[in-house]
Amino acid sequence: MDFLMSGLAACGACVFTNPLEVVKTRMQLQGELQAPGTYRRHYRNVFHAFFTIGKVDGLAALQKGLAPALLYQFLMNGIRLGTYGLAEARGYLHSADGTLNPVRSAAAGALAGVMGAYLGSPIYMVKTHLQAQAASEIAVGHQYKHQIFPAQSWKVALAAAMVSGIAVVLAMTPFDVASTRLYNQPTDAQGKGLMYRGILDALLQTARTEGILGMYKGIGASYFRLGPHTILSLFFWDQLRFFYHTYAK
Picture (tube, one colour):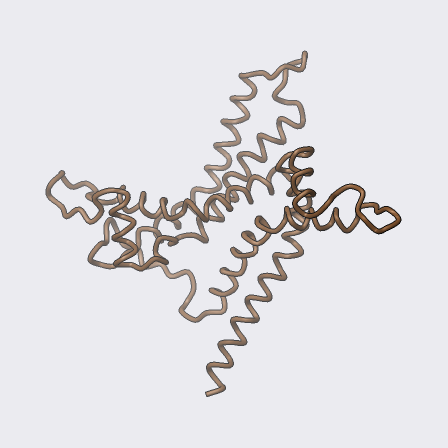
């Protein structure tokens, strides 16, 4: 559960921070092994880089490499935080008297970090190649011509649906938990709930008593239920639209 929770949390954050990764990658490759003043600066600063990429490559380019970035974050942070959480839960980080041992804690954190970085490194390389891809007028660094899926491939819809499944689960699980508890709460003779006044009250009570993680109880089961449903729904929807526009004309 620690592995799954930490991996999904990192994926949720990655959706919002990936545009900054694209900008960072481009700026770090700009002027590679060239003396200052001898090359054209396509990206003058972070804000100018955002504007330039959006204008020349299109807004969608700010999310280049999102698929490998999500996989990288899930593996790296899932392994790193999940391993550390497992070590903490098993009591490996505490001394005989029950106090937290700084040396053991640092060693466990370092080991978990090395494992996550080692396993995530190949995916990070693919992410970097994709994020560096740009139109010729603003290209920096070596331009790999990777293409994950052919144009109009059913795999594009499938990959997009898998990513959207993660976003849906992260956004909907707290409301799913609240609705489950509302339906399951005891009632009085008039059928009025005895524990919660409504969905907002259920959310607030859960967060106050069980913490934020309490609102994500059952998230693993939710993804394995909702994930395939979302993936298959969007996949079939995309394919049906394709066949309609292809053969209905």
